[in-house]
Image 1: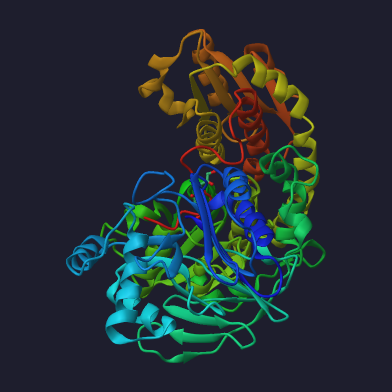
Image 2: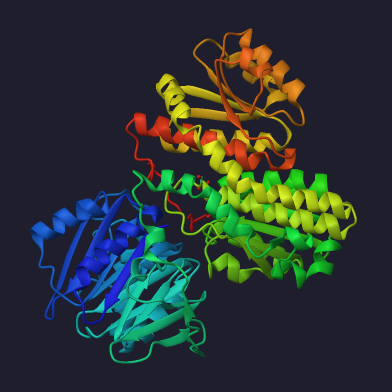
Length: 615
Ligand code: F6R
């Protein structure tokens, strides 16, 4: 969590850093700060609140001059969000200034030692400890900034992406990474530093992503110097050419990123299967799978690890893999899996799903599985992310940047990739005839157009949202493939509208949640015509007889549920296993409109961050 931005070059640093921080606000937005070097001195401004608050404060209080600077948007870990705890942090001499994304776990013992040596602390943060530790190393060992950073980091336990500069040597910024992402954009005699490439994409397409335990000395007029933090070994920068463009990371006329991203799903799903799904040849080509086909086909079982929405995509995948490919699957919360001494063998395949590719718990689960000899396959959206690099093989979801904190297109594209994988394995294992396989591929190709159709329900969904916007609770029910969709619908509503919502398998309702149902309770039921339709209809009857308000997601043309429900939202007909790609759409829209009507900050809901790089 937290977003960091830095610049050193020939342009004014302030606008680059502020704009960059705004693009990174998805990573945290409880406070923000900036430090600029104007040629003589450091001008620092920081505040509780958003980057917009920082902008107003900085423009009123400090000189904005300077071609070197660093900035930070925070998601608090140590110390409440307030002005003092905001980054950047000075060292005691006022010479060093630092920004940090991550957690220094042993900061208390380091702080005690520094206090014994006379250091004074103004904030409650672990970061202020780190910058003073660097200063102490500079003083006691006469080390240059780069060396001092390295020695200090070897004493620190935890995770970090840091950028630090020294007022006495204002032609360089030192950066380092362990566990939190850090990209360096390389321009013409200028460098950009950021948690991801979005702050510098309009300036350069060339970037280096630091590996864990690497640091870089970025000096004007010189090539960047990369080192291993542990042993000082030289590392060689792998300069990537980025594919991202500016349009993709701007709102494009929509009121919110979330709505834009909901509407991008037809394109995102198509981009995800493009080049992989070759219906004409009855073929699925996935380079990351083809190279390891034997290993995956012979897996004893597949273990899926993920968090949040990605975990819900994993649950959908469990149904698909077991149903189509007949491979046993377990789906685990990464945070539980990593700490419970799981039984993993070399014959297991672990699939890690993550939009950001940076989720700390998922990353730790991958490392654990690798230690135990499992083959690890990643499904990530962010190219070059830590998880993408840590896995043995993988397949990207080509959703494009997802900026809204609530995940939408990442979910449907994850399901798309996992469906392709399941279909491929099913075919290889001989569970599908060529004609059945071909039918599936052809149907999958129709999904973008069907998602487009599902999006046409938007005006109706808005009307329904208006009826239920003041609810305090909400239930989501689904069965089979649509049980995880019910969980996802509930998560979307609670995270952006702050209405308490729960998802259940529809049949579980009578084992407890039914007690909650009265005339105040909206119940969203996914009742498409495949699978367990009649059983879901019975569940709807049970809700109706207890006066619950029923909002049903049904297949186009449905008449039976229409007679029972208070509202129906239609989605096009498709194969049962593909219904989650459609039924999810009205649930995303419903959460979106309710949140907007309640005046919530849809793209940046309270207490959340897009990329959860702390455990
Ligand atoms: C919810 C949401 C989160 C993420 C979760 C995992 O809308 O976005 O629940 O799904 O934090 O993040 P990734 O997929 O980046 O690992």
